[in-house]
Image (cartoon, rainbow, N blue to C red):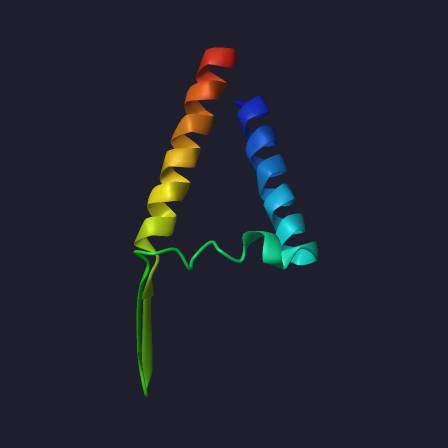
Length: 70
């Protein structure tokens, strides 16, 4: 469990560094086709369904690889 927490935290730090120093590298995330955006004069609604499906698939692959390694 400790190794998993270290790996997840390292991944979060890496994403944070990318977002801070190279924002154009991940600017596509949240703007994929299928992400729902509704903007009206007094309100905005944003539901990133495609981005969350992609994130779920990547997380699932990461967990499967981790399970097979240790």
